[in-house]
Length: 114
Image (cartoon, rainbow, N blue to C red; front, top):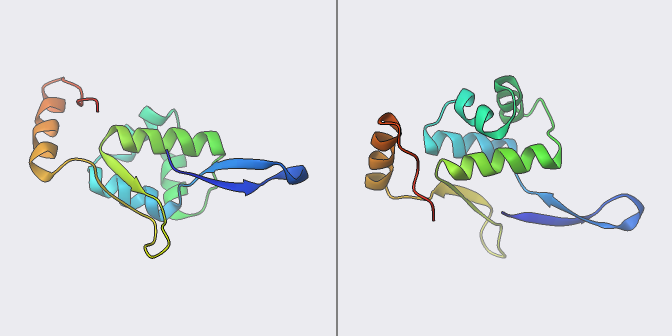
């Protein structure tokens, strides 16, 4: 999971989960998973996911970690910001693999693990 180190209260370093509304929205679009499914998997409400994606709600660090883990579970791959390239998200699996996983999900099977 991608963390961004920052200084929190009292000058102590915190590891903040890096998940922005645009990244969450893009990841969910790539994975083609509903807000209901992602929210349920992350232990959040559907409205929390929607509001976070719209930028009208801030999530706690733990909630962002849960949301990010849920998106990763469904095939999102988050890319950290580098010196010459900005942060982003892409599909973890190629299109063919994604189609097979969608078929497995429809049959009651789970996603393969790494």
